[in-house]
Image 1 (cartoon, chains in turn blue, green):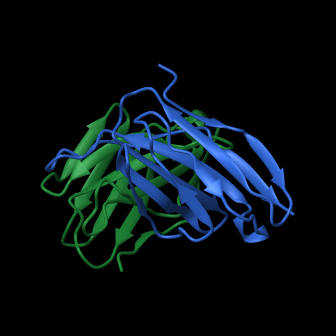
Image 2 (cartoon, rainbow over the protein chains, first blue to last red):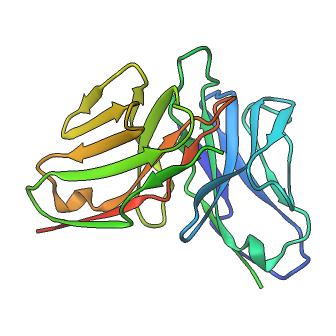
Length: 116
Length: 113
């Protein structure tokens, strides 16, 4: 199993450009999410999905779109990049929690994005 | 809103000693609390999960405690090694969670030989 994979590892954008960060998992996990990590801020949830066709907003969704057409893939789209979106982005997945059986999250290696 | 705080940004200890990291939360009590390890340039890696009805959990040299009265979790690494140097994150489920987690900012542990 490759686990959670993310591409690209590094990206530099100009203000106003758009791009898609790719995330894929091969563990058949229902739950997937996107976080951004900034110095002094910790991990903050952007969007999440509890299954194919279902997405919802997290703590900091503005400027980002997601879709979940398959169980495996959960791309994150930056519509019009801004310098405030300079960050490290992590994708994570876990088995969908049922009742009190909550499972750990598996994280990808991250994408380091710089917006000039 | 739910807040989660890790008291120390950094902790320096000598090899062989026990490292103790603290995680405090406010407002409601979570159903469970998780600890993760993050190395520079990498994603977090899950270490341990402790549920609200569990006082203590162990895994090899790691021990986690959960005190719902104090709203606190302690994370211990016994016989610490330089290889344990990393940032450790605690995380809990917010109200109405569908699997989402709130993360603390982390404590950077440095173990000196």
